[in-house]
Length: 145
Image (cartoon, rainbow, N blue to C red; front, top):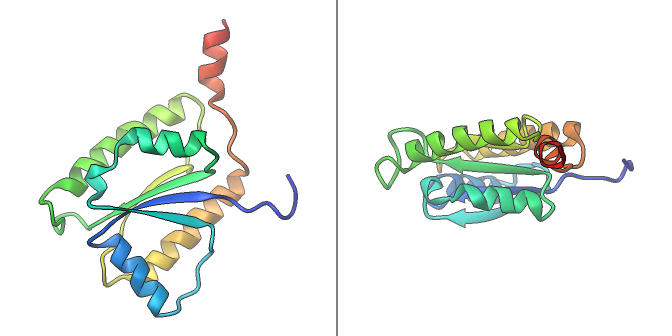
C-alpha cells in the first residue's frame, strides 16, 4: 500500500436531512476529508442494498448511508426501514468476508453540519485504517471447495 493511497467512499444521503446537513457543512466552510462522493436519494429507506454491493464491486473502499433521525423521516418510517435493511446487509457482508467498518450507517439532521463533518471524518479514518478493499474472501473460498 503506497503512502499516497486515499480511500474512496460512496455516501447515500437522504435529501431532506443528511444532504441538507452536508450542504450546511459546506456553506459553513467546515473542514472534512474530500474522500466522499455523495449520491442524493429521496430517503435512506429507498436505497436498495444492492447499490451498496455494486459500489463496493466497482472500487469503493467504503459505503455510508445517512438518513434522518428516528421519528423525523419525511416519509414516516423510511429511516427505520433502512436501519433494519442495512443491519441485515452489514451482517451478511461481514459473514462473507467484508471487514467491519466498510459499510456504515448514521443519522444526521439538516441542522447538524458539524455532525456531518465529524461522521465523514470518522468514516474516512475507519476505512483508511482498513486499507484498500479486497474481495469477498470467505465466499470465494466456499465456492472453490
